[in-house]
Image (cartoon, rainbow, N blue to C red; front, top):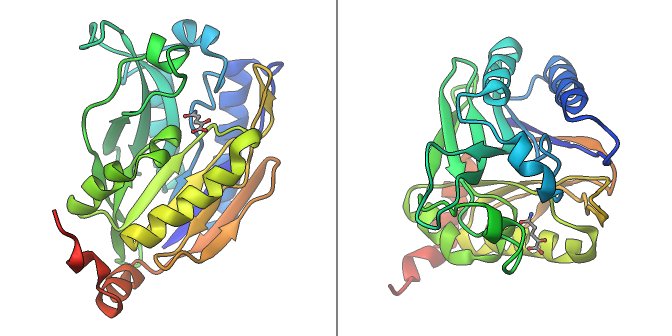
Length: 269
Ligand SMILES: NC(=O)CCC(=O)C(=O)O
């Protein structure tokens, strides 16, 4: 299974519409030159990551223009596209009275869609917890590729990576690979790489982490996207700037790793 991560870099000066066009071009180029099965984009790259003052204006429903454009892009390029996340306008207020969510979207080339609403909101009282509704659902989806290989992917977003119990629930739902789009700052990028490896080792799963580059709303992003194998080995790692990372993974390695070192069978619940 070939996976391509597009570590999108941007600043405050790039109009949102231009960025959607530019990133769509990167997806097309990547699909043409590398023929990946899965392309992954970062968290909130279209509505400007950490700049939560723009979120209200940039919010769209799940069937809005951005999600429609991403679905068309997957169909055009023939890839499964994890389009990163966007600010979703909900049909009505949720349990916390908010009408927005940080929602990631996985679309297949034949138009299938899986959405995941970020469960752990980052901001300690401001930003996400103040503006966004928290997700409540564990979401997994089967990834299939042309070779006949498949893997069950668990979906999560950025700050979620700090909460191992979420990944254990995805594991129990069959996950073999975790996809984590992020807008993770440079100041804590060492946590980003370390936690990705920790989740891989403890759950004996692939971890596919796609971060953001650039500086927006005064926050420098950390880059260092990575793909980690089920023994904790880093299979591919990006630098700090915009970059496309391509890596081939063998989904069968998860079952072989779990069989050879059956630590998960010793869990005491
Ligand atoms: N976008 C985020 O969720 C940021 C998370 C973060 O900065 C951290 O966990 O540290």
